[in-house]
Image 1 (spheres, rainbow, N blue to C red):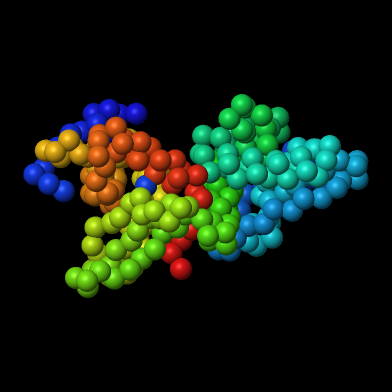
Image 2 (cartoon, rainbow, N blue to C red; image 1 turned 30 degrees about the vertical axis):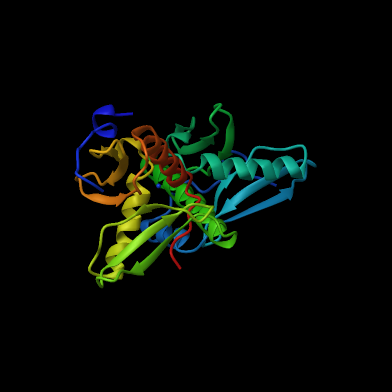
Length: 261
């Protein structure tokens, strides 16, 4: 944590059957293919292989297989593997780009303990393998957002304020508003700001704590250029505001937040 940013204090008067590792085509997707792959939600499929073991793979929106699993002894364990992908697949550092002995590239998706939980097809270049990893990350993130919407989970909402400007709220699973925006001239501006929250809100260093003259505190979420893109309610203490920022950061990093309807 960058304490110089995170603990900045301002004073105001008042005031969230699988294929083997190298079984794919060696040519990576083109840019158009990548856009098509992520234009709709991906899909996990679990199945029993010819060896009697269980597997899963992830299909992109264009039905291309972009990730496959190791073998599991039971269907229940394969489904647990899918859940592990959903947890670990939204973290960029969990994708490891590797070179095969024939000069082609692929990537492994690993869990926090370093265990391989998914493997890609092969690509003809390292840059294509990286784009493939980015595609999988986007597909997993989108799947989690869809699930959050279907289950009534955390979500963003966009609305028009009494001043005629557009705003967004981030509501936690319990319905509490944990982050609110500045005003925007249009609804599209508020929606674009939500994208910025998703980009910057996963990094705890982008949160700035602000203490008032009365011992209370709140936090602000900043973009890379220092612009304020969201702020919290006022908490009774600086430590409560810090916990609130950490809670919002973890929620956004999990990607389990639905898009506005």
